[in-house]
Length: 112
Image 1: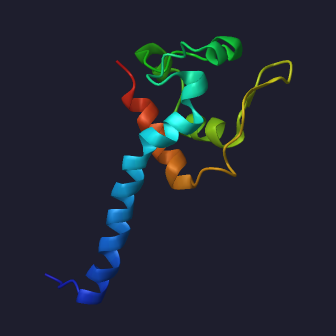
Image 2 (image 1 turned 60 degrees about the vertical axis):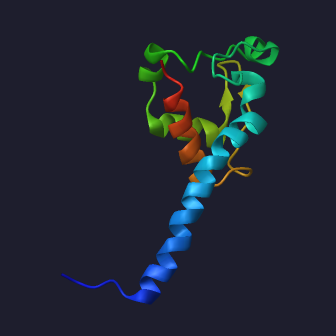
């Protein structure tokens, strides 16, 4: 069995802890960036959500209709309807790849 060197372990611990801290911030990220349309609970029962015709993120059937890759792309690039009207703004410049990945996992956790 190989021994893990102390410098390697010392470098790994902060990275692991930062991941824990980031995942703890995801509900806050959701509240700041997503809840105004998707609602605090993901149901989309907000004035902005009705106007943008957002889907109920708590619906297991809706969750089955898209992949994690599609959700990641939509968070990063935003969404425009068939007429070209923006329905969701892009967050690529505002959220890191790690935050986007954590948001996709958070969205998945909303399913009932």
